[in-house]
Structure formats: structure tokens, C-alpha cells
Length: 466
Image (tube, rainbow, N blue to C red; front, side, top):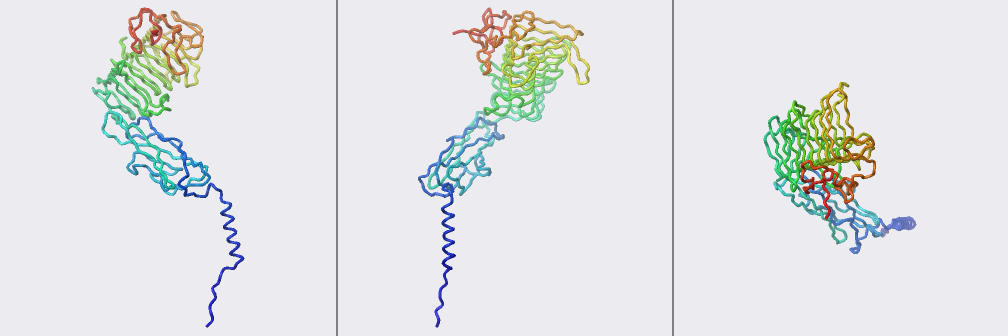
């Protein structure tokens, strides 16, 4: 019987294949060679991802961190996952892939992995903010690391296109307005001390009846946008306006801080009397992409109020009306916007869309007030010659070349002597030219509740030396 011989590969071809394999292996970069050594360490860009307080039922901005592999060799993650898995309030995007868990992900040597984190918090029926925690866990070569995820959730009362009548908004939870809220005719919305009102993009509060914002020195009312993270703290144009409509009366805005809208207060309440329909005390209006206070043929009184950083006008009062500004600080420097016009404008007329002219008598009183900005002229009073214009000015300060009766005009940089205008701090420094220049008009405390002396300082703040 003949023995069948076992066949072997051709020795030359086998040798060639082996050489090619070894050549490819030798040419593979070190950073692509996966090492299973437990001694390989990773560098994490941060140990905690922290979110600002978030309204429930609303997603966060996206935050990110990186995992760096400083070694020559690649490593393979056995897993990258959320600690709470699919029950977590957080979500991940790892190298462009949305996932709660990723396995066998390779990180080459001297390379990094980017992980994006966002959070969406469900309501928990609590008044106070509550902590929402999780972590991103990653395992490799028998090692384990983690990055903590921390956010605070805030339950809120959501108001979406609702008509309100004789209701009170308390300080227990924030109120979030979507689209609009309307205070009906002959109805009142009362806002308690310390209450917070947040308006979603483009949302507005409309008042046909009365709005009573009853803040106090220690419990101020907040009106602002719905985003709380740092980039949205000074972000004009995030919501529309508070509108006071025709027929609205007996409105009070006390100790309120209104920010980041298009128009702070939009007042259109023409009537036959000179009774103030909107009275604003001890408040601030800031970071508006259009106007701080827009009023048309209305009766408005403003005391101890700071208005700053508005894109068009700090004050625009048109087509006549009855206006009083006492101990106010109206400043458009610095300013986020390109502008050329005056910051404060009063006019007995208004050009309408059809080019017709709306004209009415103008009664204007400005006392102990600072009007300042980056333009040569920051105050304009426009008279059509077709109405009665009455002006009462007392001991105020204005950025102006032409000057006004009983005003201190100047072009000197920071002539009022603000403490730090570039940080929007408009309190007065010790050498301020506004110190002791005012007259006693019966407003005994300033915006911060500090008592005024018999020779009060101009503007909303009284300087008291230690």
C-alpha cells in the first residue's frame, strides 16, 4: 500500500506571507497597538460636570469633558456608561454617538475622547431646588474611573396662553410663561415678595387690568429669561415685554429686577386724567435689546430706579403723556449694541406707520436723576409745536453738549463717578461728582434702602462713607 504524503504549502510562498505579515505588524503605529496593561493611566479633563439650576421639564445646555490617553499604546474601554443607566436624567453623546452605554471603544495613544452631557429633569413636586446626581463610569484594563454629574432641579408653575383674574403668584415656586399670560380687564395679578417670573423665548405678560408687583428690599421680585447658565445672565432679547394695555390702571412695580427681554415695560394707557397708571419704585431694568421703558401717551411715575444697557432707548416716551423720573440712574455705558441716538427721548409726537403724526400734550418732570452714556448727547426732548409741553427739571446730571436748565452737563469720561461701570456697578465712588448735588424731594431712602441725607446724591444710589 502506498503511503499518501501530507502536502505542505510551497515554502517560498509561505515565507513571503510571513514576511508581509511581520512587515505590516512592524509598520503599525505604536498608538494603534492595543495594550491590556493595567498600568496604563488616563487623564480626565475634569472630575465633575456641574449644571446651573434647571427648570424641570426643560432640557439643559450641553456640557462636555474629555478623556486623554497620554500613553503610546491604545487602550480599549470595556464600557463607558451612566451610573444609573437608562433610568438616569442625564444623556450622553460619545464621539458623536448618542448612547447610555458604549462597549469596546478604542482610544488610540496620544488621543482623546470627547463626551457630551445634557440633562432633562422630571418634576418632583418640591418647592425648593433639589439635587440631581449621576456619574459617567468608564472601565479599561481592570481599572475604573468616573466623572460626577451634578445639577439642581427646580419645579415651577407653567403658564401657557392663560387669562388670569384676581390671582396671586407666590414665592413658593417660579412661574414660567410660555407664549403669553393675560391679566383680564377689571382683574388683578398680585406678585408676592420674592416671587420669580421666567419668560420663555418670545413670551410676554399682557395687562388689561392691574399688576401689583409687591417686592421688598429684602425680597425682590425677579423677571427674566428661562436659562440660568452663565452665558444667559446678560443676554438681551430672550423674551418679549410686559405690556400695559389701554384701560390698565393702578399698576405697581416695586423692588423688581427685570432683565434680558426686548422691552422691559411697554406702556400704552392713554386716558383723560393725569393719575399715574404705572408707578415704578426701587427697581432695575437691564439688558434689553430694544427699550427699558416704552410709553405712548401714558401716565408713568418712576422713582429710585436703575435702567441700563438697552439697544435703542433706556427711556422712550412718545406722543405726549405725563411722566415723572425722580432719583433715577439711566446709563447706556457700557453697551452691548451699536447705536448713535440719544438714550433717553421724550416727545409730544409720534410718527405712525401711515406717516401721520400723533400729537398730545407732554408734562415731564426730571429731578435728582443721572442720564449718561457713550454718545455726546444722551437726552432728547422733541416738541412738534402743536401741543403744550411742560418741563420741570431739578438738579440732575446729563451727558450733553447743549445742556439743559438745572442739569449738570459734561463730556468727561465717567463724570458721575460710578464705582465700576464696566461691571455694571453704578453705585457712586467716594469722589463722585454726583455726591450731595441733589435737592430734598422727599424720597428718604435709595435703591438699596440706604437713608438719604438732607443733601442727597443724584441718581438711584446714596453714597455713605464708612
